[in-house]
Image (cartoon, rainbow, N blue to C red; front, side, top):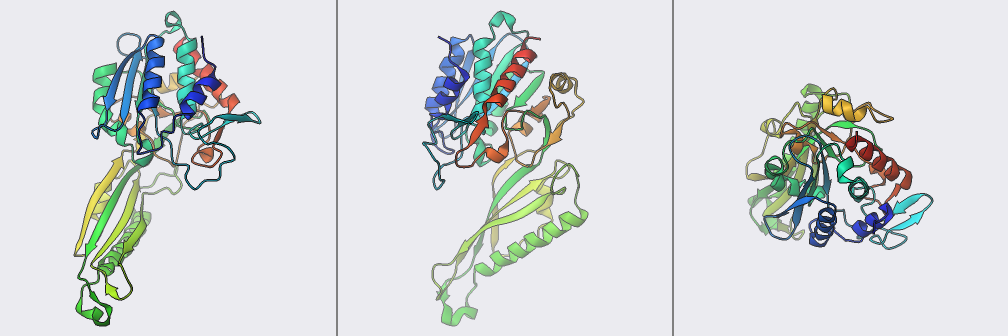
Length: 365
């Protein structure tokens, strides 16, 4: 018996695959579904053995379409949901539930096409890459990416299914995140000048970050397709000290770089004035995306869309990993990121229907 798109999406939303948690049950369900519809599948286990990814393909040889999706969703803790976040419900022409927009809605569309498009009507190979922990720095795809082409072959087009309101996206910034640890000497605050206060070099690093940002604004690369049109460096968390009357012997600063593809985080870090007694460790990164909208495969996909012009987005995706393999890569999918990560996250049913129609037409042309 065939499942409706609503049934498929309800099943996916029903798995509470919150980032950094287990996702095996969802991957099991998707793998069984794909095998039932003629796909060969390859399961990839994370380095910590706690999570899994999936590669799948129907059709022989190179070429065709590769769809990329991530299995994880952001937490719901502390959010005011009107109903169970992991129980799909419908209201006013929309489906509600965690991940409906980001990005289980897209995955549901792909599975609906897999079910409805018979093998003999599929004019090109169709592949799927399903990852884990995208929301906390694209950790899953970083482990999976080297196996993609050896396992699936080289597709004509890679489609990363984030919510773009079905508009083609060919660019976004890359990101690198860091932890800085400043060390000092503990002592009684009555004799504070006799000890090295770890908060002082940490504060100096915050100031250095501010100065580096000013330099990037004045002298760094620019791309007016983005807002802001320059690379950014941002201090997000500063913590240290245990009591007011104790000189802190340790402080920690978390900061990030979001960079245009014309610049590298290494070059930006090289211009950062790091104080003494501070050690910096990179904690994560993903590459930016800068695809050529005139690539024949991208143009062929765009020709079937009501809005064929390419744009950029402010958020990051897994797309840069695929582009670095030399694949024509775009970000495209149903939904608006403004609805993602919110309480009562939802997606328009009409956009899901349009997504399915477009994918079916492209795969059977």
